[in-house]
Image (cartoon, rainbow, N blue to C red):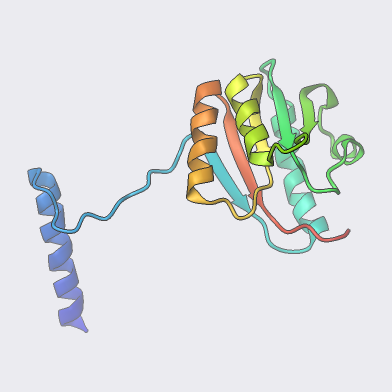
Length: 157
């Protein structure tokens, strides 16, 4: 086992030396950089516990000092305006948006992000494929906003 670890370390040293020397690696592995514009939160557990975890985060986001909105795109049924008020969110700075017609939640989120009228747009797209995350990230960068996706299967409360 010691020899294997040493061999792996040697391989790492060779790859590091190649990258430092500017020579291309023989099998470069694509590295996806984390986006400063798009984040994902994955919640597991009972819906009411997940909502208790979300409430303080949403409250802080609704109290941002800038004059833009917190937008919730297609939130799960338990997240009503009444629930948001009871959780202490600022209703004057919070929007709940739902797509119309053939529009998808992702398309709506991208439009809201690109407009720049919201400092943060929260979506519930589960699962979030890499292409969707890239699209949300580009839209967020365009509108100088933050995109947060929450992956959670909400059950009944």
